[in-house]
Image (cartoon, rainbow, N blue to C red; front, side):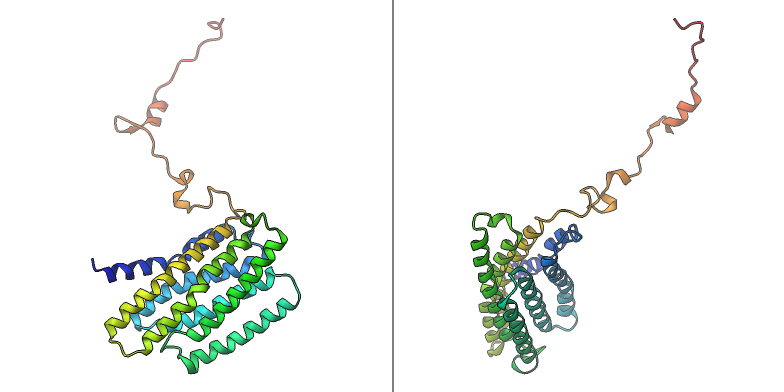
Amino acid sequence: MDAWVVVHVMNRILEAAPIVPFASACLRRQHIPYRFRLVFYYVAAKVVLFPMDTISRISIRNNIYLFHLSTVLMVVLLAGTYQRLLPAGRVQQIIRLCIGVFLVVALLDATFFNGLLTDVNSYAQALGCTILVTLAIIHVVYLTRSSPFELEKQPEFFFSVGILVYCSCSVVTYGAINVIYSADYDVATTIRLDTLLSSPDTFLAAVQMGLFAWMFRFFPISVPARRALPRWLHYSSWEQRPYRMLGQPLTAFRSAVSYPQPSPAAQP
């Protein structure tokens, strides 16, 4: 198999990574705290965008508009999560201001700078990832000051690590892809370069989703473990096959055979 085909297939497989934290969060959806609800909504949105991306590739041969939508959801929901995690004060006002500025840049990026169906939203992605990385650093510093020796026991720590893992590299990847699409390469070269440069971004996005799944693991399951599986996997719901002897159910032989009961006089 061609190496480019292998890379393309691996990218498509890694794009399904949001299914893992979504499944983990669904089992705990009743016990997810208010502070992490927006993370659950973000993961659910990524699960919905995954089949939309496949359909757009096949039907209209264009999935660039999903990059714009995904960036808006990522920044608004994850920055809103930091607004709930960080202590109240001036930081809350700064986060709201940053979200407002980002939405303006995202709108301009989709209309004037790159276009909704023309190029990826490198400007909005760069600004959004910069905001999230800054908030992640502030949050990690806040955690190290409050409880420096118990970071591995705090779900919000894994949330910030996931933000740092993905967003710190996504700015470079989106910028490089935007340059490639703006150049005068032929279609085959553009597709190969896009596949090659998007591989680290896709891999780190899958790592981020793995960290989010680890974060949801800290919350208790809403249903018993046996009921968490689909009904068709429950052993108790399987229909037990009757035992047969000579081609007939064993119960027929039991009803046909009568055992004599001992008389009261024969009993000692």
